[in-house]
Amino acid sequence: MGQRHVLITFNHAPYGSVYYTEGLRAAVGVTSGIDEHTVDLLYLDDGVHFARKDLERTDSARYLATLSAQGVNLKVKREDLEARGISDSELADDVEVISHDQALDLVRRADLTIDF
Amino acid sequence: MATIGILLTGGPFQFQRWETAVDIGDAALAKGHDVKYFLYLDGVYNPIRHQTFPDLDQMPKDRILELVDKGAEIVACGVCVNARGLQGGKDYVEGVRVGGLPDFAEMVGEIDSLVAL
Image (cartoon, rainbow over all chains, first blue to last red; front, side):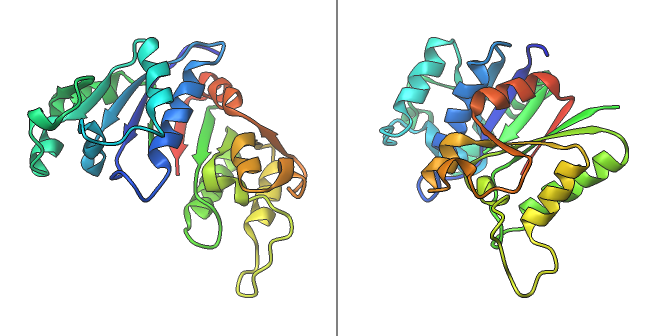
């Protein structure tokens, strides 16, 4: 047993599946164990739409609040935003834009990666 | 020897993720590794013992039972189980335990690598 650092990526577009909220629930669960695992959350591919400020957060708000209280930041890959024509002005304030190389660094630093 | 974790979110009879998950676990066990599964979301449908389908020789539940017999540890998310009306996994094949995300967190601390399907 030991503490692990887990990268959780969200790759699917909003609406049409429960992967986002259930992935967040898993993130809360992973960080709540006695090992106090840590997580990074990264929006990739069509999942970058979750970074938009106008996206409705009713289902995800409580998980995001719990993770935020634990110091977990939301990150989104710039190149995937650009590919979908999403500008920085459309993004929520609590999301950090990172580059492809920075995203790769997150993968390298993680002990385990889970995609939802 | 390593400990392999497998997070399975796919159910049976629509996608083949369950079969990939079982095949990977089977291969790892054959090489002497430990294998731990966490069944999440529709993945919790895989161990139901009443499965039947005329075109398949082996049901997912049969393969899962084999994995249990070979020493795999299989835990299903209880919230997911009850959300789908599976009543605490009462119809599961023997050896599959219903737990929760704390079990997944524990698994994360024990495994050397994780396959998410």
